[in-house]
Length: 176
Image (cartoon, rainbow, N blue to C red; front, side, top):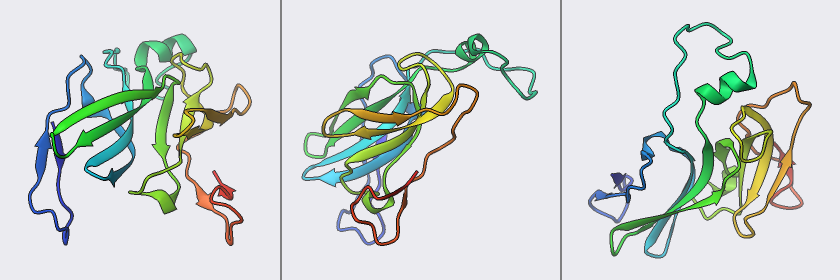
């Protein structure tokens, strides 16, 4: 169930609870990238696990994997999805935006809670296959295309954050 709770000072009065249609995948592990209101809809993009139940490490020791095969046994497939919530009909639709293995999505700070052009995220180095977060990608929400950067094969990236350059010449002028 999705719960939309009005912010303090909002003209909307009551929380709304709407069932997300079940497609066999539990929506409890969403990594939210951004959300915004457009007309009578709330739209949010999130990174979603595929629902596969992987084994969990029991040793508690670092590193918890020592090979790519170990990682594949421990990690789930993740991809970027768009959810559209129709506030009039109280229905939710969802669509996979890309099947690339991705993690830790976010948008430019100036577009937080607004309609966004791009989503920045960490991606695996093997396209659609399960792989640890290695590179950084910029997903274009309009064209559904993706630009990416990969470091050397022995290097890995964490969560990307966009920092706008002082006095930017364009909205994309900044650093990841």
